[in-house]
Length: 226
Image (tube, rainbow, N blue to C red; front, side):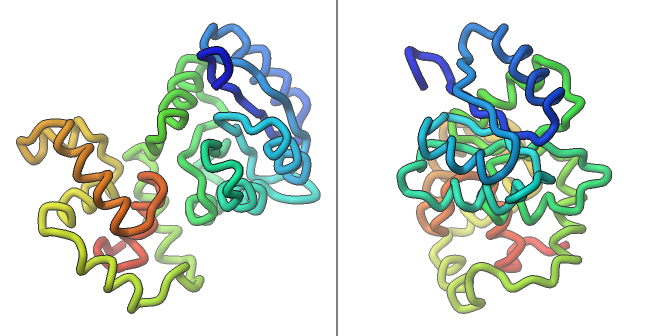
């Protein structure tokens, strides 16, 4: 964040999309456009140079796709404060789950209205995940169809699960359903602050850097099943 504003890097291979997002987001006083990238390779290079707060990342780009670029950014220790918000069309994009595993903090529909875009950026910037309940069905389907090797072994998953209390496991299941802290608080009749504390502890125990990664862990560990 520069001078109190959220710095944003826009990565999309379509010039019209890049210029459109830049024009829209520049109208918000709490945003600063740090740069634009036309492909995944450039996105990684500019992220390293500019260290933006949020990267708006298209998935299908030349040279390096958005998933690989997301992985390079989220695994770079120097970019620990940079969060990736993936641009997608959920109805046709088969890479949603892969983007989560790569470290994306959430997803944004390309046809979202300006205020939805702005809200999504703010959510990602503060370290929360943007996984709408309407998207969870697609994530579950992608997980079931993926057939790829989980990032951790069954033993590692079991060890991490064994560290969770019953309450933490319950909250993790609700996080995996796409519920916010406020929604979980209402569901369990506890305060949002208490939920936030539990989520922080769950992240520490599962070595997850945000809520999106908690969703991945919940499915890969078998705590939640498709």
